[in-house]
Amino acid sequence: MRPHRWIFLLVFIFALVTPSPAEDAAGTLARILADKGVIAASELAMVQAADPEKRVQLLASILEEKGVLSRAEVARLMPRSDASDSNLAAQLRPAVYKPDPAPQAVSGPKPAESAPAVTSQNRFPVTIYGTLLTNAFYNTALTNIEDIPLFGGKQGSDPLGNDKNFGMTLRQSRFGLRYQGPKVAGAQIGGQFEFDLLGGKAAFGNGINMDLFRVRLALGRLDWENFSLVAGQDWSIFAPLNPTTFAEYAIPGLSASGNPWIRMPQFRAEFRQSFSDRTRAQLQVAAIDPDMGDYQTATFSSSRTPGIGERGRAPGVEGRLGVTTKVDDRDFSVGLSTHYAHGKNAGTIGSTNLQTDVNSWGVALDYSLPFLKKFNITGEAFDGRALGIFSVNSGQAILPVGTVGEHGVESRGGWMQAQFNLNPKWQVNLAYGIDLANMSELRTGDRSRNQTYMGNLMYKFSPQVTFAWEWRRFLTDFRNQQFANERGDHANMAVAYTF
Image 1 (cartoon, rainbow, N blue to C red):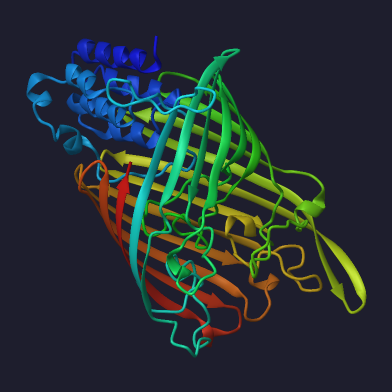
Image 2 (image 1 turned 45 degrees about the horizontal axis):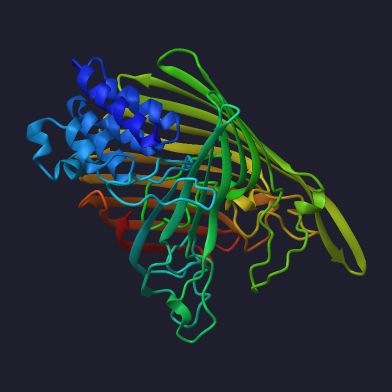
């Protein structure tokens, strides 16, 4: 039986046997499909947040968009009054597409009667997806990145008037492939490849908008019922959550302001255990690339030389234990994650070459608390040392040999977001983040604290098109240089077309 056929049968059966909202069969089916990687965690949350009597229709519309069900099959699931409304799916969808911190691989092929299936050379069904994102922005202060500012430069350090600027870009657009192979020894084979346009600029006078590809994700998966193996470049399991934003889409929101993040090469194992029909746990452990974020960015290079972490001659390790419990139809989750890597900082003092040990470590708490269907609190808190690879104390997480921060600078911080789903089309997000370095391990003039306030409004024009407006206020402080402390604003308008 073709993969989409069994999914259609399940949806059809659940639609027939659902006697009342209390049974919540559609929610149960959505969870099964999420566990199998057919729908994403964010789409599961969409179904759970919908009115119980509309969940079957919403789930069917999601599966139609993925090419798992045809329009004719969806029509068979809809009541006659709903089936006649061609805009029903758009009305049911929530306000905004929310990217997953760690997208699952695989979804079914598109049925032949709807469109030809896309397959790989090995006849694996492949799903093509993406978001074409246009951003227009305005800054009131000097920042490290014009279109995706993370922190401010020193006040008065720019004589050229770059502190106020306006621009437009499409380089935060992203594209990807998900593939699903056969089952082997009980394991579902799947994978994902994703890239965006943040890889740099072409070396031409008019090359400002000739953006280069950047690899985001490139991984393969083996998924058993309660166990998974993952190999490739994927999201770190340390501090895995991100705020909701289209202004910081290529670089996660509140990066360098309390949100540790990175996608890195890794070998990962995942263990899942259900304690009841409402509570489940997941343990993840990973061996990772030990890079510590000291890669030199001044010039483009095709070569790779050992960095601080790679001189440690061993992989880094990460672990995360997460627990999710269902209250009514909402998932409350909390996780505790850790990171460790050993490296060697190298430098010269006078005529003497020196190496010093660097132990990069971190511990983070993450949480998602949907107190109401229309109100959710998410966030993270962390503490650690030499976490530059995670954009913590970015650019100064490990200082040169001979300085007080030669073994790595300790930092702590976190972020929190309040999300308001006003109705299926409108969403508001308010967030705050802070990255606070240990002042005693910094040099005069180093960045000691970075804070960001963020607010955005999103309008879901259709399942494919979202408009977003965002404002950010950043406050950047420097050690023993109060006159250089910078305060600035970033305004952003985004139009996203998701396919």
